[in-house]
Image (cartoon, rainbow, N blue to C red; front, side, top):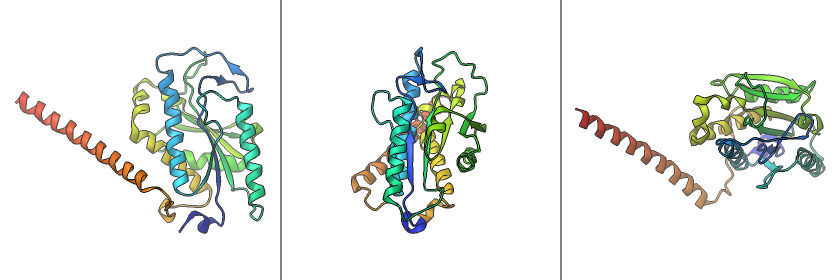
Length: 254
């Protein structure tokens, strides 16, 4: 069954892949940055997760908007304004539907330790706006997907959440600051898994318990499907090559 047939409408998902060249405080003001060797890698990690999430969501026919697709940085005010304007346009277009669970805003904000913050908890935090029960529900549904990562749900008066006109959460992936987990940022399987878990939480929020109930978009080009298949084949070849190298090394040892 297609998504629209299942729900009666197409949900709107607005995403924010996090900061690029600048970091902002809880009041929306820019903070000074001290870049380190891993800063660009960390920024790319955020973008890779959200790009993968967008691809997956579009394949399920979600209406998806990225509020900061530019290469250069956009202020929090611009991001929020874009989200609110598009949310209003969406409601006007689908004025025959009603309810709370029509649209969500998801921000993935990875703290690259660019500021002198005392970040000692090293866990995944999902923030929702104080007293917003719908956003809290979304936060719990997404957090429940991360059963292999220490997580926490926290009420917040965050600048972004406070100025949104819709349900929204902010995923603070500060757990990535753990030294032994830095390599995850370059692991394609981990990035795909992160995106998939966020998507599954969204699906549950919109009332879909099983992703297999939804038919993928048939408009997905043949070239893209072939490319995806080739990527899987290439990854398998790499694993086989590594395995053969280990066997060869073992034989030499013997």
